Amino acid sequence: TVGQPRGGTEFRVLDDMGNDLPRGEVGELVGRGPCCVNGYIGTEGSERWRDGWFHTGDLAHLDEHDNVVIVGRLKEVIVRGGDKVSPAEVEALLRTHPDIVQVAVIGVPDPMLGERVCACIVVGKAGRAPALEDLLKHLSSQGLARYKVPERLLVLELLPVIGDKIDRRALAEITAKEVALRYRSQAP
Image (tube, rainbow, N blue to C red; front, side, top):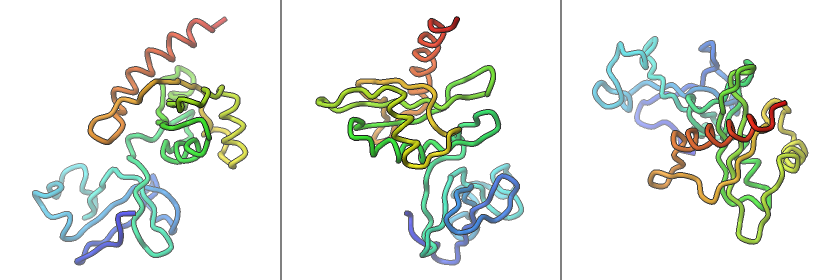
């Protein structure tokens, strides 16, 4: 959580159509007020400002105390055949697997669906790399919708980082090459 709005700042969480979402549902965080003054975050009239609200590009929800909870970035959403998958949701569930010490979920290009869900994992020294089928069972047992379950798995020694954050751009490049090679060689 990043807490509650302060000092006259307002926040809303919107769906794709610009409608307000109920507390607990994830959508784009928009704001207006002192935190969004000209020159600080953006200039009124830019594409990020619409109808007097600054569109942050953050995926968030409001918790039961009206705290803003950031769960990811809108540009990180995976669009799989028209369905939207939040990497943060899948990553949180994968972190509960006993053999996984680091995880990032990204979309990989797919000619049929646009993108497929790919789990990039790092396992502990004593852990073994789980098979994709094991991850499917693990995620299904936690109630994850079938369309959100990873269809690709890449086991890495380390995830690329910039500072303390996963470098998703570098990871996408690594994954695209590895997954393309692997699944091209398995094609009939």
